Length: 107
Image (cartoon, rainbow, N blue to C red; front, side):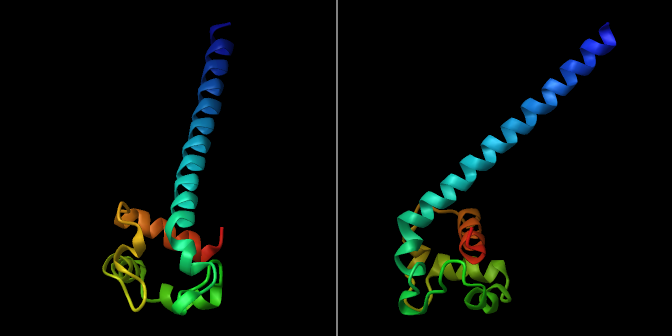
């Protein structure tokens, strides 16, 4: 009886853990989506001033080849027509990385 109860408790804990991971992942995805729609979308939706368009693999490929560190630095300092921090003044380097990955993948 105790073995069955223990297995049930362990299974329940596993299911709850997976649910928490899913909720946290959704929350993180929502933050990236909201930040994109607040700042990045202004240029990256249409490709204004040479900005690589959201989800356009061909436009993002040469930039991604430079490495994520170089891309984050470009966003942080500004590049060409993109202002410093891409107008996301509250964003950290990790936020910029997540936004770049989101825009490059288009999802």
